[in-house]
Length: 64
Image (tube, rainbow, N blue to C red; front, side):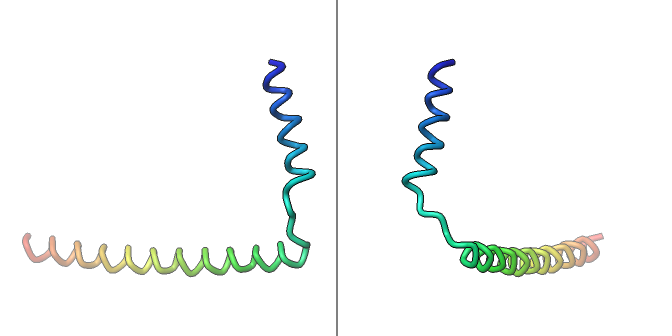
């Protein structure tokens, strides 16, 4: 149990002293960037899924 407590204490110390955190403006702009690319990527996946779905439905319609 003492090992876990020591690990958590050292982790917090590492985050507090050695990590360079972005400014609030950088964090906001990066959040918007991630949101935009997530939306674009999900729309691309949706489009590919729709095309494949229609192609498979057309194929099965042909063979039946």
